[in-house]
Structure formats: structure tokens, C-alpha cells
Length: 204
Length: 204
DNA sequence: CCTACCGATCGGTAGG
DNA sequence: CCTACCGATCGGTAGG
Image 1: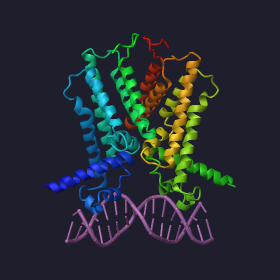
Image 2: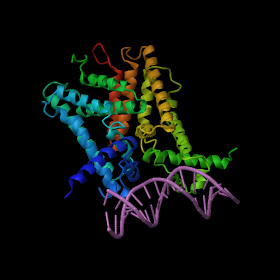
Image 3: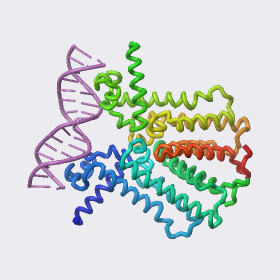
Image 4: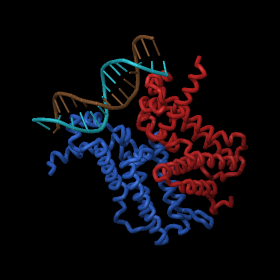
């Protein structure tokens, strides 16, 4: 049984840890620096999880929850189709633009950091990103089923491009502070969804 | 004056360091682990540069040289135009596909790691990436000037998409080991270059 | 949630 | 290029 106080502290820890991790990385998130910025002793902080690996795992879970609330929840009630898909993409870009995390998209940073580090964290990130890509794919397929998206567009191909474009916007934003990248990403997405194999851009 | 022996050791250091950095990050590249994997003492290794920051700087420069040799040099003799641009993109994707660096594109990893860490390394990476984006832009503009690329295509927009797509291919490759991403990137690039504002996909 | 520790490793230096 | 160090910090534990 956790006390109310304990849960509040746990939340404080996660809020701070998730931000530090997005800025400096999940590996550079040390127990010493985290405890200092929370005005806790190292072992006091340590009491809330068993090891650094456990800390990293709950931080990833906390980031996943924030991502879901910010990007996925807003479209949950809408019927499948192009509008829902467009709103999902808009929410995703907004999540990048609004700096939901101090260091930009948490998962762009974390996947890049851990793709060369085998272990539990890498596996968890693969699982989360795999789920996200499948969700995107489903949105595209459903929009095609209701006839609002060109059936010639290969779902796998569209998922790849969407993912690349939004991550690309995040990359430009973070490295150059180039807010213009959001507009460019929107244009790219519009061009993708107006794709027409037989010739002629769609009329919207 | 550096001895022949000293230069050889320096090269051995850089070759190993650049690979470790691409896999584990420039910050996790520690003097201890690097010296062990080179069978040198820490201070023996240290003698080759003044500080960790200096090591990171020469590692970034070594990676830049490898990138230039692998991606930029191959097209240097060709006349500007669509073919040159396509070959540049092919070399870039090949650089990702062939795992020129153990951990995938060195600059994808390094920029993602340092975009939230102000300092010299971040500035150097911004400068290198800025130069690369300008080079890409020039290739596109020149191809338009010789009439081989649709003049309606906005160079800035095309640069953004190209960069995003290739980095996206690297991301898929590294996280999922998904070699198929290279083919998807090729398709995306082809679609981008066959773009036609007035309607109708180009015929090649 | 704390004080008081542990061995290992960090970047770096002295002196050769 | 080496041995032999330095203070600081790492993740983690004992015991309360």
C-alpha cells in the first residue's frame, strides 16, 4: 500500500525525470542529478524504484501516457476517415510544436539513443513504436475503406512517410529551432494524402 | 611534429571512436572504455588530445570526412541535373543501408543526442548539417535550372522531405532492423521528384 | 524518506 | 606512450 504522500512524490519524480530524459537522454538521467533537482537525497529517491533500469522503465511508461493523452486521445471519438486521420496528424505535429517535452519528442530522442543498446529499454521502445505504427496503418486503411483516401496508396508506404515527416519536423525544430519545419511537414502530409497514381493531384 | 607512429595510433583511435560513438553516443564514449578496446592506457590515449571535448570534436570531424567520401565524393564529377541528384540520394541511402557506421548514420545519432545540449559539439553539428542542407538545396535548384526538375517544387520543401525520408529510413533500420525501409525511402524520393503541381504524376 | 557508506568509473594531472 | 595518482560522481546498500 502506497501512501498519498508517496504517490505525490512518485508523480513529482516522474514529471521531472521525463523532462530531463527528453533533453539529456535516458542514460544521462542520473540518480544524483535527478535527486538534486527534486531536493531529495539520492537514497530517498532510490526508495521509489529498485534500480536505474526500473527508473528508466517507469519514465518510458510515463512518456507513453503523455503521448497518448496528447496525440491519440483527442481523436478517439471521431469516426474513421480522412478527417480523423488528418486530426491525428495535426495533434502529432502540435505535440512536437508545443514542446510537450523540453527536449522535443521523447520517443525520437529515446529510440535514437537506444537503437544501438540491446536490452529491456530498447525492447520496450520497439514495442511502443510498433504499436504506434500499427495504429497509424489502421487509420489509413480505414480511411481507404470509407473511400476518403486513394486506394492505390500503399498503407505501409504512407506510414513510413508520415513517421519520417513528423520525426523530420522534430529534428529540424530541435537542432535549428526551425519552427517553419512544422509548416513544411503539414505541406508534405497534404501532398501525401492527395496522392493519385493515375495522374492529377486530388482536389482536397 | 608528429611521428609516423603517432599518426597511425591517432588513426586507430579515430576509427574505433567513431564507431563506438555512432553506437553508444558521443557522450557515452568514455576515455576508459575507448582505451580498453584499443589496448592502451587511459593516459596514453589521453596524450593524443587535450580533453574529452577535443576527442569529441575530432571524432565528429572524422565522421564528417567519412560521410563526404561515401556520399558526396561519388557524384562530384557529374554535371548538375536530375541524374546527379538521384545518384546523390542513392549514395546517401546506400551509406545508411551498408552500415557505414556500426550504429547507423553517425549524424542522425549525434544530432539527436546533442540537440538538447548547448555547447561546442552542438554548434559544430549544426554547422555541418546546415552545410549539408545547403548542398542539397543547390542540387535541387540546379536540376531545376537545367529543366530536369519541376520548377514548381519548392527547394526548401524538397530539402525538408529528402532529409526526413533518409533519416526516417535510418530510424526504421536501426530500431527495427527493417531493411525494407530503404526501398520505401527510394519510392518516396521518386514520388517527390515526379511531383507536378498542375496535376499528373511525371512519367519518370 | 534520511545519513552514512561501498567499489567502480569518470575526466584529468604529475612526472617520466 | 607508461605508472600512479586526484577529487567527483556513478549506481547501489545498510540500517534506520
